[in-house]
Image (cartoon, rainbow, N blue to C red; front, side, top):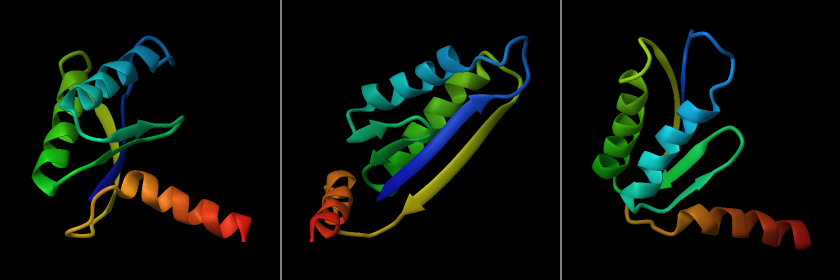
Length: 98
């Protein structure tokens, strides 16, 4: 399963959320699951329970500092598939070179 998610604080004294987002991304990277961070989302690959646990921990890290957070989540659920974090991109790239 692939889960792309974005978590960020809402409200506060500043419109800069970089440090808070970095705290959430740190949780993902420390999980040991395959992951990729882009300008808008962090994508994590693994089994349902382990991926959702990472998303929850990343959200909880922000809730420790902020009274309100926003979470956007998109999932691609394909049982018995792994390595899709790179494979899906490779498929698109292959079609682009045809």
